[in-house]
Amino acid sequence: MTLRNISLDLQLGQTILVGRNRKPATITKIEYFEKTGEIVLNTTRGKRKALTFSLYEDESTPENPADRFR
Image 1 (cartoon, helix red, strand yellow):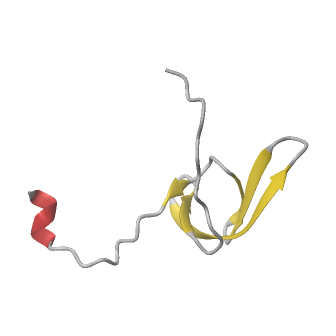
Image 2 (cartoon, helix red, strand yellow; image 1 turned 45 degrees about the vertical axis):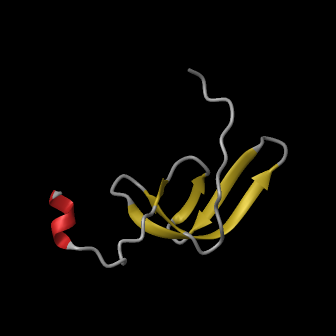
């Protein structure tokens, strides 16, 4: 199976996980380079290429601790 299409929904101010230890960083600027077709994200932890990050799931929603074991 070959991936032929990918759709990303990224916004300024969105929190993503970057680096080996997956630390949270906020997107401050999104740059697109027409010549190379590359997308670069400027974050609070430095520049990142568009596909070198993980999405951050907000854990602030109240959750029943017992749900983890069900």
